Length: 213
Image (cartoon, rainbow, N blue to C red; front, side, top):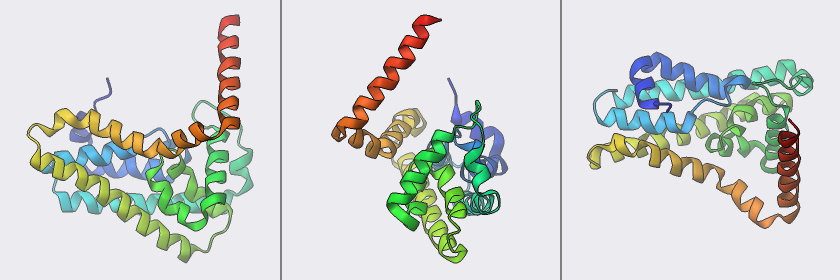
C-alpha cells in the first residue's frame, strides 16, 4: 500500500514543494495526492517532524506558483492543450470536465477547484486558455491556495495535537477529505437520471469489451 507518511518523511520540504507544484501546475500531475499530502503533512508537523509555519509557507508558495505556471501553459499553448491526443497519463476528458466546471462557476472556479481532485490541476490552464485577466486570476489563485493549504493542513495539525497516535487515522481522514471533494459529483449522479444512464452505458460497454478479450 502507498505510504504517504513515509514518502513525506523521505522527501522533506523540497519534495513536498515539488509534489504540490506538479499537481497544481503541470497537466500530468493530476494523479498526485494533493489533499492527502496536506492532511498528512499537518499531522507530521504536530508530531514535530515539520515546522508548521515553514511547512505552510512552502506549500502555499508551491500552490500559488504551480497555478501560475498552469495559467501560462494555457495562455501560451491555447488550443494545442485541447487537441493533444489521449495517452496513458493525459486524458482529454479531464480537460473537458474542467472546462465545463469553469464555464459553470467562472473565475471563482480557481478557488472552488482547489478542493476538487483533477479539476484543480486543469482549472488554471483553462483560465489561461480563456485569457482571464492575470491580476484577476492571481487574486483567486492566492485566495484559493490559502484556503486549501491552511484549511486542510491545520485540520491535520490539530488532529495530530489532540488525538493520540493520530498517524493511525491518516487513511480515514484522507477518505473523508476525498469523499467531501467528490460529493458534488455523487449528488449529481443521484439527481441526474441522464447522467446515470450514461454511466451505466459506459460501464456496460467496458464490461462487454472485457468479455470479448
